[in-house]
Length: 302
View 1 (cartoon, rainbow, N blue to C red):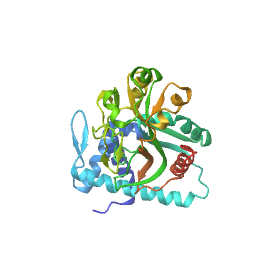
View 2 (cartoon, helix red, strand yellow; view 1 turned 90 degrees about the horizontal axis):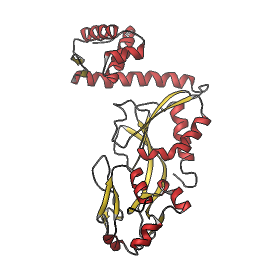
View 3 (spheres, rainbow, N blue to C red; view 1 turned 180 degrees about the horizontal axis):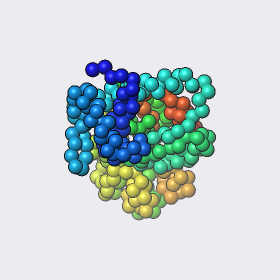
View 4 (cartoon, helix red, strand yellow; view 1 turned 60 degrees about the vertical axis):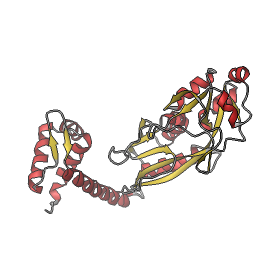
């Protein structure tokens, strides 16, 4: 059934309720009562002759038809936003809320993020730090920053910069246990491993052309799904860790940690920023992407 123009408000109510998973939450966002939200949804369902939500006393969930309708509604509003932005872009000043998901190690990006806030004070950053695999579109993020390759065809991506891995330990640890001279020597050391939260697999220390190299994944003393605890344990002489250089830059500079097997570690990584391909690149997102690409690793090419 064709939906008249005066129903755009109802579509907005539906989208807000679907994203909040609550009539109360949608009402709070829209400045109306939960009852008004419920009545608007009921009228929309009657007009479409389809049920959009499963309702219970505790929560609402989308029906299969509701999920399909939500995707189409998002496209409608994205197109409307794009049209408005195209008309006003020549005079637009980047502003508004920018919701970004970053990995937990993204805390180390705070100097760059702080510089962005000073450069663009009218943009409010809503930062979500997590190592879980987020659904950029379903969870309503404007963008996410992650390492590794981009595999979601619904997303656009841009590389922000590369980093290298370092095998590090405290000077006291190396004094007590010796400095490994070959990867095979790590079999006699206490090793601190990083486990990818999204896959449960251990970070490989010596990947070569996608294959595991001799001495890779040596016996572990501890495993962590976050990098912060590994830095902490390495600093206190509890073992050797293989960590991205940006995570231990300060510790290497002040001698809290020292590196080993630098020539053997060829492992590198890439930080990427991703955003929905169906979404117009708004001024606030464009300046954020450009700023992060220029300033996250200013001494390296992204």
